[in-house]
Image (cartoon, rainbow, N blue to C red):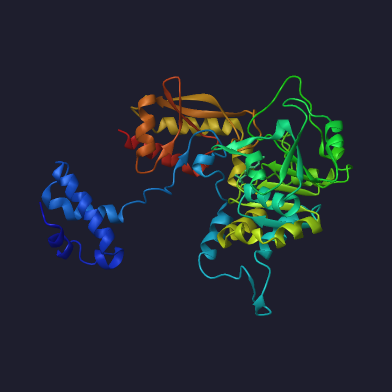
Length: 420
Ligand SMILES: *Cc1c(COP(=O)(O)O)cnc(C)c1O
């Protein structure tokens, strides 16, 4: 077993200490020595293996192919950015004019380009603001508008967003009190009307974006609530700025504002197809109160986010909208072309069903096509050099094409072939 000091001073690792630092190189060497002791590595390969680990692909943050059939998969980072947004990210990696007016040579409003692009897409919004994500938009609104007072919410809309985070707990963390109205399945206009009093700071409407309720149900429209004399805040979740004909049940910012909402909150990385962000659109006074609240500084959007958001809003078309609107027949042709390139592998092509996911259009199936393999392919595909994440159904590894840009079909072919 080569000694650590000898290895660190040797020719193979020359330059490594300078580049990565002594601590990191030493720990890579120790790990390689352990593999050698375990019999998994020849003694003469220890230095080379340590170097490979230092140079190797990142442990996380790796690119994957989303073959799950879930367009906005929260575990896979939700929306894929448009090319324009990716270019904007690269530019924004260095110093930028995010908060500077080049013409006048003075400080300017942070992210004014992104804010202007958002305002241009939703003319009904008198003012807009952008924060870190939609949960931040909710917290900021509740803090600035309702701390120490009451938020009226329908019991049927007190939802859990995911990963154990629940809306009521999030809202109450701000010092606002929740005044529940109605029942799980039915809430009426009278329930809201009777609840409004001098303690009421706002009414919150939350889109049940990750479940559906059918049967004996009733909910109240924004239009019916906007006349009650208190601001109506609408958490649409999904990030549609205008109606989307393909998803008629999904709420959008323009319609909510037209119906009298004082403020609309949404995510940037759901159906809008942009980076993680919290969009706030509405009345001048309300948006200003939120944007000027001290907490706003702790929730502010990063310059990379603002750059990608502006580019997304200006681009219009995103990989998410392309995936949503792609004809099923086109997916079938792609699936057949992939299968045709997998000679000698037990592959088949079948129809499947994709979904929006990530808090959007629950219960709306999107007809799709997939490539099916034996279940034993699922694990090696996930852990390969270019990971492909599919789903397992009835002992089959299902690779659904709807969430995958056509240009990535070659990645699937290569990844399946690499499984041997
Ligand atoms: C997704 C969602 C949220 C949380 O948004 P993030 O951007 O993930 O913080 C909140 N409310 C609704 C209705 C949602 O769909």
